[in-house]
Length: 426
Image (tube, rainbow, N blue to C red; front, top):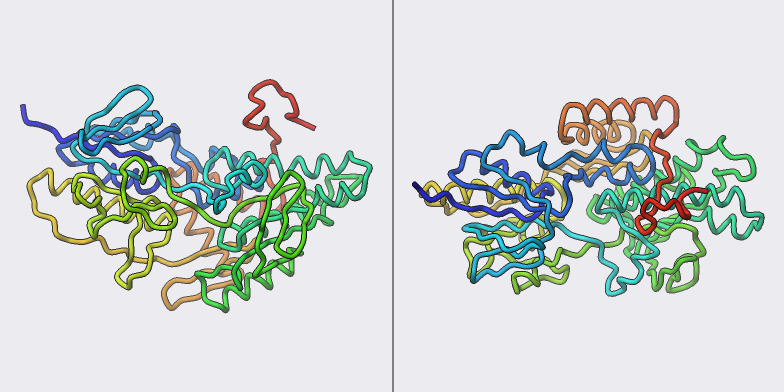
């Protein structure tokens, strides 16, 4: 019997799945390990958070995705560490040996040394985050309807988004739509259109990775739908009643964090050199220094492009890294020499600002407004997994566009309540 290489991929995000697929024809046993049983299309998490889509519209079972691939096995386990010298991965159910290891564990929210803020200002990285934010947004209107104190009503109807990148801009625009269109006629004691949405950015402008003209367009569009934008403003504290700024205080019922990310615990597992964001520094072939059989891809890897600039932590970059590493491992297993370094190809930047408005940067091409929104919609539908999901999302968006409604307005139990129902509904 010939030895079949054992390849372990930790993480079933964009990078991990692309790597597994690239190994489909390799003489290898591929094991994909993830603590969740589903793959989530993170670019549309904000739509779940603002009740435009349901979780099932943007998430798919990992086993179903890899079912046609006969050499792939999926394990729903929690990875607790790695022993590079012993070539094994430590999980909650035991150790698993490998010949090649791919770390694709992504990133999580960064609160810049104030992790206690996560209790009051959730970010958007997982389905659980999105449903938590959705609950917070919807229950704010419900509680404002019943409280008699007008000051408390104003606090509940104040929504603060921290971070003026694509996620922050998209969240601010979507919450404005919910307040001014979706819920406008649903309440009797309050006017949802009076909601105060505040977008806070520490830098000098929104969407810093976009050209200045598109950034200014985003600012004008948000202002037109009633979003207050504060640039060059630092948040110094988050608590249950709002945020403290360097020059004041904002009382708010809901705070959403979109200000930064940090890499997964892979640096600790590998005892590797990292950059300031906690990403593992890798070589030109995405391997770990001193361990050519260990690769790091996606948001977990600190990689530079041919111009020396950091590769952004976005889905296309993770996919390109995953495909590259999968092909590299396949070549090594087959005994072929591989000297081609990883080269990132930037496909462009996209962000939607709300109904009929988006900004797109594709090389020299810049789109904005309705044309940008159509392009953004088509691009995101195209990259969804599965024909059913593409049809469902396209239909939901078309229906929402015609009716101004959002069909996923469920207030479900918070994570710490479980099935008890306590504080679950108002």
